Length: 407
Image (tube, rainbow, N blue to C red; front, side, top):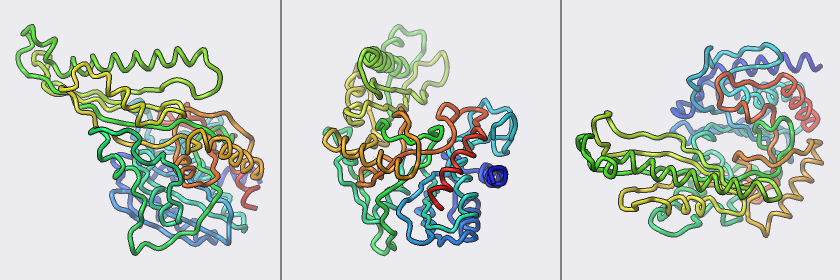
């Protein structure tokens, strides 16, 4: 049975990897491509499918069979291919105990496992596939929760910091009202979110906040002494140096403290600006993300970074995506939510794992009051890399666990 399941899982994974679901550009349609394939496979396995296309490549598909108690969620979008790929990232390659392809680890491998298991089981099942996790918007999950009468029960999805920089944040992060005529979905109180956890049940992770910093300068010839002061690129570098120093200091302090998820994880994802070496840059942009420890709200972490600007008049910070940690709800809810997730893992027969530093949409389900954990094949160390792969042994392990739950 293991060989048959692995062979079929790899067949599905090869098809899923071949579909271009990079995000951006998120050129994904609900009536074609990957979602058409999912719908055909799921309906053939006796599941009823409901596809919701929100536009702009944000699509989700809910497939249900019988009256299940647990919802499986997997996103099917991927990041753009790293420039280091030496082979076609949309062609699955199986060798040396690995399956390599864009999204194979994060997290089409879990989707392929579920498809292969659903084909050979008849028990109750519910699977939610979504297409916008990698974009930093999570419109699909927010809409699904709204249509399931699962609105946020914590304050984590609203603006946590006042001020001009956050004045419009609540309208972009916590509007979960579905369209008036939108059909309703079943309500699931137990959720397993697929992400690469090496087949361990993860119950805790960091929150996340992203932002863009737009720096201004005064253009001119680079020979001028004022270039050191007036260049927008120089101003961006000065701020970035302070931000990185803050993150390093936070990590140093965390090294001596007990417990997981300590310190501030900061990444400057893109730095752009200037035109030529002999021109003073009049504009520069830095796009960055922060993953704070669970007790520090992402908006508050961003506010600390914003306050480091050497000259506040020369920069405009625009918050992007903000989302809570797992479990959501703060210290008052932590113990109960952790215990409920641990009980869910035990009930499903999933071995426990350690907290992780990356963010997942499990936090949104948690904020809505669900008992939720993160589980899937592959390691986060392989996600988003050139030559991304998932071990075949992980696919077998995940499929075996899924089969036990769905049987």
